[in-house]
Image 1 (spheres, rainbow, N blue to C red):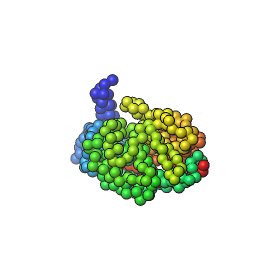
Image 2 (image 1 turned 60 degrees about the horizontal axis):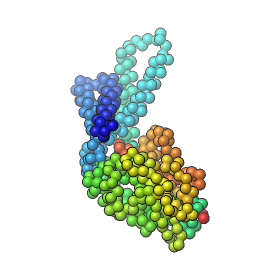
Image 3 (image 1 turned 30 degrees about the horizontal axis):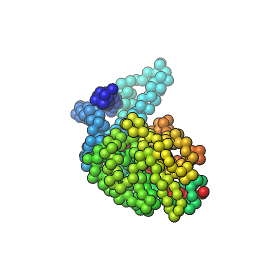
Image 4 (image 1 turned 90 degrees about the horizontal axis):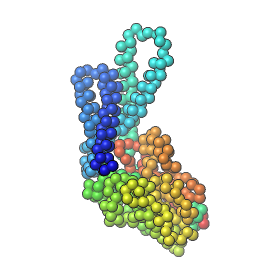
Length: 390
């Protein structure tokens, strides 16, 4: 299937889905609310426009300069979030109404069934509208507040005691793009540098857009400096945005790209490797995620820290020298209840876990993707302090 045909099919499916969703919204929020004629017409026109605008913004989002975000992308992505809460709440309400109707005695007759139907339609529609808007607003404020510093101590049985106290700052899933701008990036860099890290790890999904469109927005990332270096591995969204230009640009910002590669680091005679692999899905784009290649010709007696965008890369890990994997990708679900869906495809969703003899830490995401919303999990910059025990 050609790329053009794939895009055409995606456009057809997304447009059809948008129309069906907005039709459902019209039924529940316009028809069943029985608004006055003028309000009815305006609301109908709004939903028709939005049903066409959403597929467009999803298709063009990566091509929009970040400076357009406050005027174009943010309102449309916010609407996506409101749609999500509407479907979750109204769908649940409709299921409840259907069950109640099935259980209601067939002999019971309401004196004015039309008035009863109107009252229920307005009550449910109004309640869902108020709750959807409230949840969307809370999630928006949580996302735009920016990341917090998550401080974590990581005990590593095979890491040298001489390196105990080594501090790593991890940034992941920043998603600089239409709704995450230069000011947000500047704040992330400021917070990261206040941690005074020994090493900085950037574990993918840095951008959503082209180098040309985001050059100015990502410029502050050149300020990520650490004595032992700043290291980067690709995420799946860099592949959507043009992987080769981004790998080159990331290097120009002072980050060392670990493309299925490793580097030996010495601190006062104590040794460890920092290794990194391409995103788990890189095979779809002409690259490959290869742990064996990343550790080729390395000394198996030297402990290794592995950067891998997706947590599920740890399932392919057969190298006992790797004592810690740093990942992201999941956003901890970003908006409840997506956490439960993420758990279906990733072995770990957030936080620190032991996987056999290896530890893994999954960052919740330093930014967000799509709707500028996070609920209940706030974005994070992780400050990891390694406690060597070998």
